[in-house]
Image: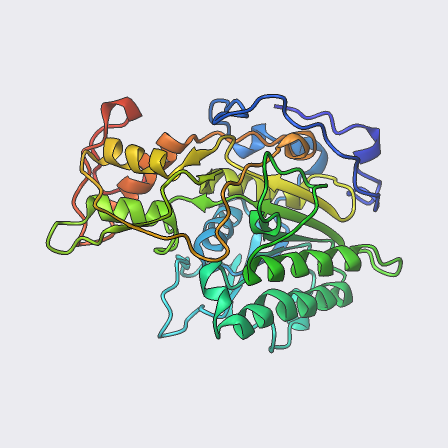
Length: 395
């Protein structure tokens, strides 16, 4: 699908758009309820953006946080696209840290290095780099309240600040920041990028601080660095962190009874989330690195619908054919009642339309999970999912 980027976003003679002010407020979607955006059939990345105008295959790119859930998927996809990828993470090669990164041996376009953004020299790592995808951060709302906050501040704020300075000195064209829906806080409807940010957790505060650092750097008159901020809404899929809701509920369903954990349900299960499948997030993130965009733009990246935790529990049981043992507990500090993304700007600027709905995404997630953990049973996938019985490999 070709996207009409409009004359104000057309590439300059130098190959990318000059700095511009962020666009005005997009109109909110008129629809409401659990399916506020219609999902289209799956489309490959080359059908989503006007590659003829912005093609940059073979670029030198850096992915920070490349050993994590989203970063590892992104780095591997960029490599398959033909980019020269430098993967940075403090977990790379660390003997005591489990990494999600599948490092391709002997590929001359691949480099992985253990790096602490808040401490290490970064300049040499950014020589001749076109785009930096900045995903490195300490994640999670609940742990940000305790003594680990110093780590959150160092990684999410200080590391971002030092990386921005290094990008400017090295002449990097664009930095794409992975932010979070946590910056919005408690909301009553779909969140638009222009809505006031009012995080209700220390984690959300650090992500908002990282955003603001990026935006003030992008606004400087003496820098050519472009910045794009992506606010991800609850990303899930293969390799998701074990403490995240969909990973926990699927593990509880698939675990053999003798070893099986209960699924801890915080609250009554009525809280709603916009869940976004990992493949859609990777597609949007790569597009944000190449499509001509206004300087300092913020874009929501969501899954196209919301679901309650009770909905997720029901889906997990349908997909796996197994009951989910539930332990209900009280809500925890920093939890919000609902999240939901207005995707108007993502559609207009990135041509983004999520292609994987919650049932399909959870089915893929369950299939992968069953094939990677000895304590998990093989799921009997519901025929309504459209997939056959899981075989242990990722679809």
